[in-house]
Each structure stands twice: as C-alpha cells, then as structure tokens.
Image (cartoon, rainbow, N blue to C red):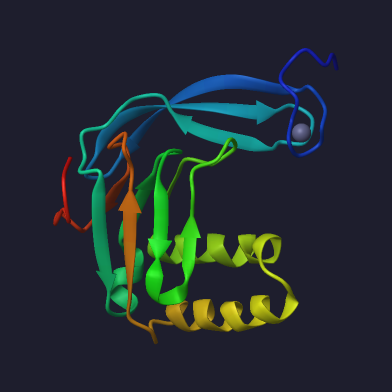
Length: 162
Ligand SMILES: [Zn+2]
C-alpha cells in the first residue's frame, strides 16, 4: 500500500482517506456525513460538513432507564456535559461527531475514562457511570454547540438561544 493519505492518529501511517455517505437520522432528516478512514487499521473520524439550525444550548433530564434511549447527535464543535456525574466532552482537533443514545454516551465516557483520570478516580467514576447506566441515578445531559449541528432528540426545550 502506498502512504499517500493523511497521517492516522491511531497507527501513525499516512493511510487516512476521506469519504462521504448519506445518512438518514430519525427526527432530523438526511445529512451528509464526511469521514476519514484509515486503510491500514480501520480507524475512523466522523465529521458533519454542514451547519445546523438547532438551539446552541439544550438539556435533557434523565430520570430513569427509559430516558437512556433518547438520541444525541453530537457535532465536533459541541461540548457535552453531565454535571451531576462530573463528565464532559469538549471540542478538539480529533473530536468525533457521533450519533448515539444516552446509554451509548455513557459507554463512551467509560471507554475514555482511563485516558483522562488516574487509577483511584477511574474506579470511583466507573462505578457512578455503571449506576447511571442502570437507571439508578437521575442526571442531566447538556449540549452546547455554536454551530447548531448538535441535537438532543426528545428534548425540544432550549435553555437559551443565541
Ligand atoms: Zn491507521
């Protein structure tokens, strides 16, 4: 294989290639999803190349297990926080665009945890996230996205527009 692409952050070989696929998002409509994919190791970075018209701030109350299936669409400029659990994802150079539900969001935090916390804290936080995934803790998911791409499906109550 010839290393003609962009350097992959996962395997450090220049095999990243860009592509595009059309995506149908429930309650959102069609959108073009642009991505970079590594031909060597399969690493993928997603990105939405459009700008949205959703409120720049929104929040969703999670009161029990049923709310864990609410969807979140997160653009790469979006800050996602769960203040009660002390968790947040901030925009960064390889910040990923993703569509998941609240349960998937918590799984993502579980996976990222060891990268950002030290040993003792990891175990402590892991326990709290597991309880949240079991619907034992009430919490709030907030999103802030200046581009208006991000969206919490199931929350149509903006907490401020700009
Ligand atoms: Zn790679």
